[in-house]
Amino acid sequence: MKIIAVGRNYVEHIEELNNERPDEPVIFTKPDTAILKDNAPFYYPEFSKDIHYEVELVLKISKEGKNIQEKFASKYYDEIGIGVDFTARDLQQKAKEKSLPWALAKGFNGSAPISDFKPVSEFKNLGDINFGLRLNDEVRQEGNTSLMLFSFDYIIAYVSRFITLKKGDLIFTGTPKGVGSVQIGDKIAAYIEDEKLLDFEIK
Ligand code: MG
Image (cartoon, rainbow, N blue to C red; front, side, top):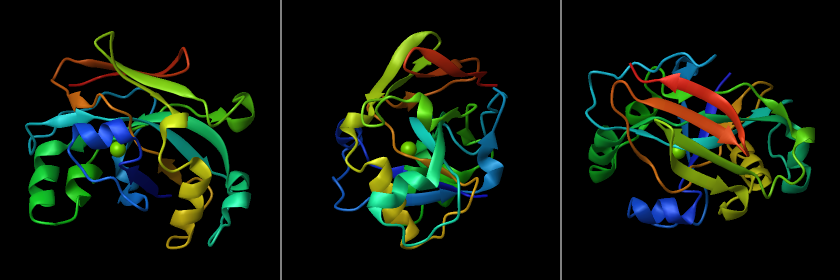
């Protein structure tokens, strides 16, 4: 399986990092070794001094597809979970300054903690899902899918023009405002609506 992620999909997050608003989704990937499951701890890596959390809704692809039309895109994912797109912001900043890829800043071991997934049928309206992140029990990020620049279906259609999607692939759909640094000893919890789906420690 593979992990595909969308950068810059929420306007207020674009503004907080002084990035440009994109005309098309900004896409990057993480290797499968980035995944952390079952609330496993995140071990702070030695190569960074500025690891940021980014809470994101995650789609799970249910069947293979390429060149998927947007009007059929909803047939290609059947579960939604929540994850953290951990980012070595210091490495990413250096890469951005030199127009180099983000692969290591975004794809290092453990950079993609994910929750268990919920069937799409449990959501009343995919365009109105609240989600968020708490750091040590304090609310740091709150988002709603109505604020996305590019919808789930648009992202699926767009990505599948370039990369064939396969059953089990994960798509991180972008983070709302409020990203910030973590320290060893911090606790991160992530929510969809009022349900805590992720709860793990930084070690
Ligand atoms: Mg992100």
